[in-house]
Image (cartoon, rainbow, N blue to C red; front, top):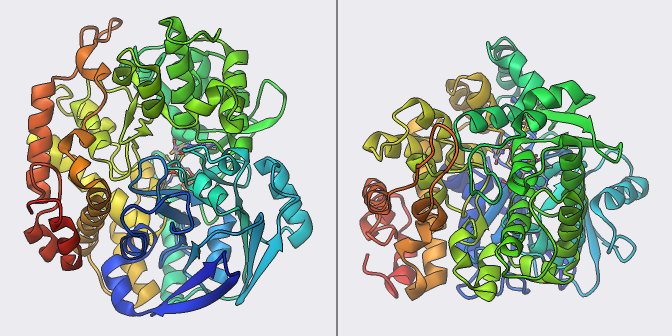
Length: 605
Ligand code: PTT
Ligand code: SF4
């Protein structure tokens, strides 16, 4: 099997196909694995992430679009304008399936278009379409226009005004509710004047043993729908986490200052169930988790936990239909709900403390709406907040950096960690900044000595990072069948072999995860050079210096010394130096020798 990479040069408006041989799949698989290799190889240190030298990858993997549960995902990756290191996100959309049906496994965009452009890939044909009428429209409008012009069979991704205005945490959107690339992949598209990308394919993606894969699919899907947790998942999806977090004092409330929300029952999974109008989800999935309700403007909106927690409790807003409107606004503007919610909460706290004159306070729904719009359009303080909480804190001063809730500039997702050392470490060592996607160790931690800083937690984090951040991001399939309904991991070895003809075990996939972690970390280290240190992996001061004041866990905070010791033990397990950079021995073991010379310029490996 070979990988087909479509290179699209937006400056020259031409394209070519490059075939990558099987050894690339064996070593990097696809998705994040392939993307991180391409970014290391092709995006030089110091490249302006919003300039022509940055490259944007949209990569499926060998399982994408095949008869495999929840296989409608792809990774979008580039140098992140937000973290300034490797950035990516994962999106479930028909575009992933259609990409592979065009006969390509990944697309790499380079250069910058002079005028707004929409790239349409129709099997082997790449068409550069004028997008001047799409530019300035929101993502809902853009999508309608794309379907009208190219037909409903296409799969499309697009940016909204936030991406066009280069908001540092603009996402790429699809299908009114799928979002990917909270590390600013929407801004990278915006900088390239790439308004939308669509795919329409007629081919069958490569399958080494199609019959075997199809035979397995029936049983695999059945195992999912027969699982014990299936019905509850279908009722609540990710919304089940509101109650879990509130009960355990880990909900982000009013800019992460508390862990319990007085109106949690009005925004939790049960409340959502009482309003539910239907379900939605990604292609090839039989456990669709998008829950639709009517928002306060009487329009349909899909709710997920992160969106609700960051735009509800974290803003002091306890009305689910209003939260729905804020969520919809972010989707229309193409603004990440997590960073957007965190930035608005940061402004609310700053106003409360008198750092800014704006009249906005926690619980102010209209104010939140206005500010999300101002961020997307870069108006007033929205222009500052569009740079993220850390950069804004540097301007607003008064030690506000301590409650700018970010790691490596990326705003932390919706788990409040005063009493969760393990989840705090998972955020700290997430490869792309404060994101929960690679290690959602919270569920395990709540059941296993939550207050400890133990080696056991480090092992669990490593295990999750390898599987979630390595294998699933590279297959690329949704990880939720495994995590939420216990779909057996053995399936993936068999499906991978039937799809590619390559035999790999979970030991190999785990090593893939380690390889990707070392490579992504090397991209950050190369980029930051002498400015890199282990401080980049440490959560904000708020979790160490302040305490929860309410509920069973009142008085809880993280212990800095114990956290730093845990971080050091984590580095040791990874074979990284005390500054969190992979050692030359580790790089050699993982087949990443080519990284060493550039890192040695700044680090003692
Ligand atoms: C993901 C992050 C998440 S993670 C959520 S809700 W989650 C937020 N969703 C946003 C949104 O919606 N609109 C918006 N404007 N911004 C948003 N930002 C936030 O982005 C998503 C699901 C979910 S819902 C999760 S956990 C799982 N994530 C997966 C992953 O990362 N990899 C993988 N192999 N499988 C996954 N399955 C699940 O997919 P980022 P989606 Mg998303 C409206 O991309 O950048 O990683 O940020 O992809 O198709 O929407 O599915 O409670
Ligand atoms: Fe998409 Fe949810 Fe299905 Fe995963 S479980 S593929 S996120 S609908």
